[in-house]
Image 1 (tube, helix red, strand yellow):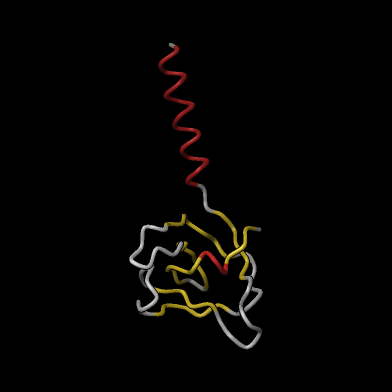
Image 2 (tube, helix red, strand yellow):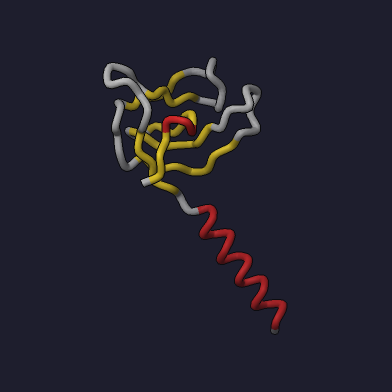
Length: 92
């Protein structure tokens, strides 16, 4: 019985960690945009451009296991899903 409780607790904790986050864009010049890219690399194809100070973007996890070593987060904006630099995303 104790084992089943631990398994249930672990599954619940994993689901909570996998829940999407909400971000806002921060640190972008007013006349610029944040590029959302197909892969977490600076030279990957741009799939969306997010205006500065945009709020309410859904995030689906971040990684720094990239060729550049920078942290990138998977986000959804305007129906597009791609990767944006974590440096320009603030949790809401």
